[in-house]
Amino acid sequence: MCRCTLVQSHAAHKSLKEGESLYMPRPPATGAVVVPNGVLVHMVWQDASRVWLTELSGMVTGTITVDQALANTLFSAAKTSFTSSGAQAEFATTVSFTGIRVKDVRTANLAEHESNGAAIAGTGVGTVASLNDALVVTKRTAQSGKAFRGRMYFGGLAVGALDTPTHWDPAKGQNLVNWCTSLLASWNTSGLQAAVLGKHLMAGTDHAGNPLPERAARAIPITEFDIANSRKDSQRRRLGR
Image (tube, one colour):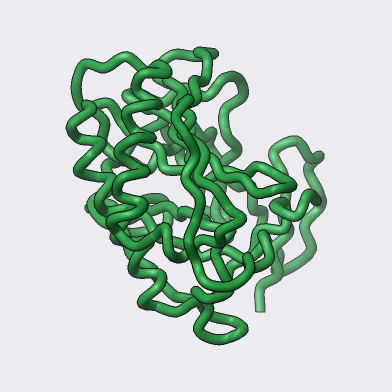
């Protein structure tokens, strides 16, 4: 079996042993993140001890200004569908959806704006699951492959959303999928399309030593959401590590 030596872009060149290959993944370009037509969008969550984010970004499809007014509009629509989709009933009562943050990345170093509307708490059954436990909703585009999809990590769910100690109830997860799907329509009325954003990557090599070309920053429209599997995923940084 071929062993691979991981070589970071800043590391000194290492002598390779027989059978090893040189692997240098494409590093992000340095400097401010700029994505053509890109807008960073984060959902903001909070409990009694901390704040965390879920990323659902977008691309501009019309003429819009990325400011607090846009954040307020997106948050208001998201709260309405948070309830109607059934997603609210999957989050613990001690967890609140407190806002949406938007940042225009079509140009470097622009300010981030956060909505200022009232928060909405979950109505789920039971106590909150550990904050490092997340249900992952997959963001799909019209193309296949890891480079053409994304993931949304939802923490703060109630234990009533669990099916087993290792998996979420698929029916409960579908309520979150329904919520994300409803956001596609509401965003379109604001001149924004939910999208998977990709940073500008420099050239590198794959595990087989084949060259990987430089990749320009890009925004790819999301066409649908689903749950690839219902197991509990983990994000330890939610615990403050």
